[in-house]
Length: 118
Image (cartoon, rainbow, N blue to C red; front, side):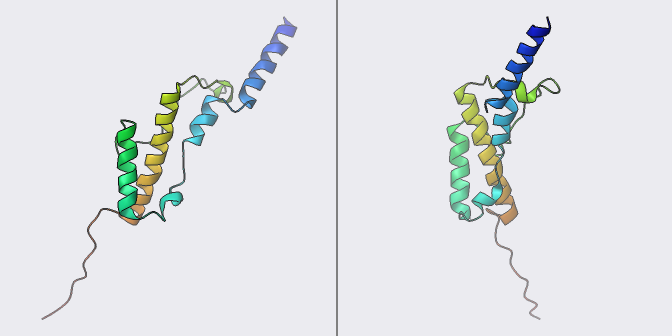
């Protein structure tokens, strides 16, 4: 019995260390929006809309996270299909693009200054 528990614990530790855990892969979907700050607004809006259309996602998509049993996140293998992983990665990119778009106020009309002519 004790031997079985040691083997099980070793297998769980190895499963979490190979880089294929669900929580590790989901964390990779979150991206920095700073990567998109140098992309012109019109190109960034087009990229975001194209990515959303390609993966059938809304333009306000955000990365999602599963809720594995407490403490087992690093040991839960990623069983999602390749298509699902790609869509989740695209939602992370879309979210980063949206943060850059909102920070730079892309797509909004330029603010006009009021001239005080009397």
